[in-house]
Amino acid sequence: MPGGTIRSDEDLATTANRELQEEIGLRAKSLHLLGTLLPFAKYLAVRSSVFLAQELVPSQLPGDEDYVITQHPVPLACFEQMVESGELVDARVIAALYMARGHFGKIG
Image (tube, rainbow, N blue to C red; front, side, top):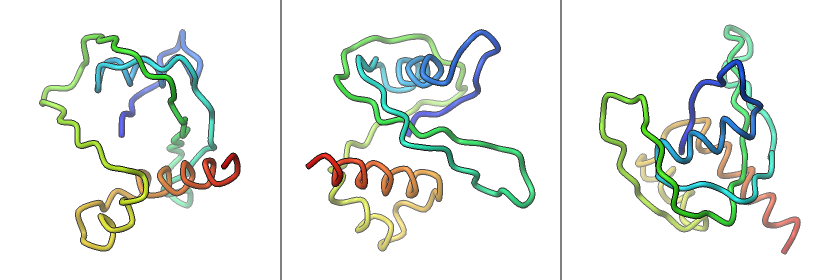
């Protein structure tokens, strides 16, 4: 799941769209803020804003990572199997996927 640091001249949605372009080569025509996660609230002031990106179109920006980012598309309905198998262990990603699934449950 794309992510990164907010630049001083950006709002959250601009950062989300920039990170999408840098990390997976897509830009969202529509972004919906699902919420904010505090992964380790007791000890760190780190916040993760979770956006649902829709209407994606190709748009590549140069990234700042010193490693290759690979993509692994997975249907939303399958992520719990990945958690159970130990293939998906990042707590923020897991929480974001539950948030996305909840969003789709509300509209469908």
